[in-house]
Length: 480
Image (cartoon, rainbow, N blue to C red):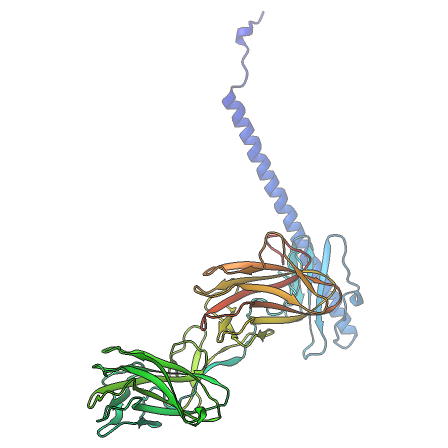
């Protein structure tokens, strides 16, 4: 007879070990199974791409190297879990095609320039089962064209070669101007003005430019006064372009350091307009010195920083003389963005390398005026349906407004996308915006990234990247 006291079972620890081992084996089995499944899908997508490309190429061989207009013409169609996308252009030389095959969430493509199936999708095709992005140049990587952002209308702004184009107004006995290397704000030289024996306000060094009626200009220069000029200094403008009158700016009394004096003036007629760095009052400053450098005339309103053709490239901008070095007008240039148009008169759209979400570039909107609706848009033809318009936005710190997305077209309406904002005033970081676009019938739709309010921070910017429009209402983290 066997005693019950001798019966033994598994301990709790032993049971736990068995459970853990079973769990590990199950996890390994699941991972291995999923890996086998994924490899099978990838292999099927590669094979489908290769077979489709062979049929396209065979079609072209039989028809004088003309690719089929549709995949159906080459006897290729969706089947089971395999779907195809196709792009062709028989009007260019050489002719081109690209086909993408997708099996569930794996895509491969092959083209006239890519002879083997490659993981990914043709440009403009949906990737890994997601709908295609219908926007052109969505990450702003395409070729761009150089454009002029600002122009310095003075022909000898930094006085590096000589002092040609500069003179004296109301100088008095003993006044003079000459080039100097003693002080400089930019480059290595400046203009040295010696006050004469008089007590006339607005006396000082002067230069001029050709103004256009109805245009508002910002005129400025940097000045250095070793000692006080009594009543201080100010920028003034006079000449035929303002009816022979004198238009005066604010006064500065800074001594012993470089300071910018500026003024904004509107030409009432086309003609010569002179700027004067003059005394603010009737005090005799006989024998005192004044250095002048970095003079700038540009269409207003404008950012406050100086530039000429000698300025070094910074960020998105390059600089060039429009004629003889140091003795001509100059321009600030940048690259525009392909496939997009400017909106509103208060901004310039640029391709920017300063920041980007994907790729190397983004779109930058530089505010150059105080107009409303400053930004840009892309015109795209959309069929009937509901679309999700998506873009990522970065607002510069200190920006005075909120960046928004919207769509406009015949019969087109907009709505919010649940969980996403169509506008943002967040500064200093990328924010994703989404807007629902409802299109009742095939029409041309303008997709805007812009500031709907009147903008006041001239010289500030906002950036846009990953510009997209996809069919359907997308609330997922990834839409295309």
